[in-house]
Image 1 (cartoon, rainbow over the protein chains, first blue to last red):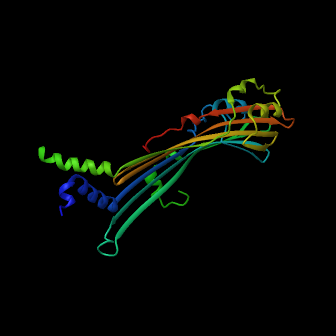
Image 2: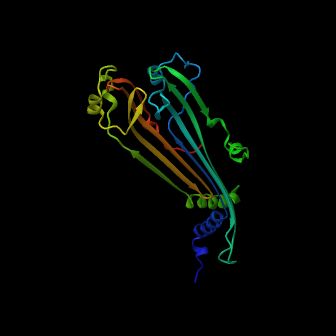
Image 3: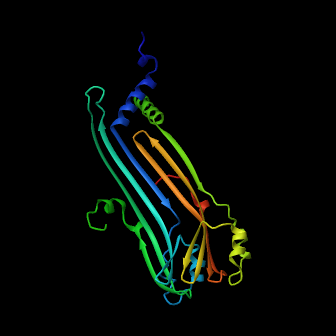
Length: 148
Length: 126
């Protein structure tokens, strides 16, 4: 019987090499973005002056609306998920009975947020902002600081 | 150079034999039409006129001086690519949103509009 390696060398070898390599090392990167980017509004919005109408014209519809202690709160947000994983294994299960596998995975969700609070008359009374996307992925996910 | 041709060919073949790609598209659909919003007049238009034009809202929130009617729909697009030992995934979700504010007498006072759903795009995570 003629070996298939002699008839289809360009099929058999890549198949075996590919199967072994994919069983050994893999690296994965996933990114998920939800919502639009949140603008930096501190320069143009002034507490006690800016109105609800001006805010809606500048920023559009908020992602969340709520009432908080008699004030109307608008929240604009964008979430950024970044996931990466590295896996290294030696697939010896067919010949050895067990294999080696080392894996490291990480997932980080960061938020860009702007919170605007308005009085019942529609005057801006408070601004809060957080730019989570400025934190670098690896440094943030590897940090041991509490709350970080 | 000639002796590298064969291994290179094999390597490329491995690369493409083990590769695949996929695309996905999801819609959270609400059939409101924002093109007639300019016919609504703050201080005059009522809840009934708004709901007649836009239909039932996705959500209603009670506020300090009335209510907010929220109309929302989304479009998301996902891309996945597997290249031998490396895989990439990208997911992009955007919204069309209209938030209409009413006073306690159910008269429209303000509205905000964002039509971004069409910005959802396929791509790579870089």
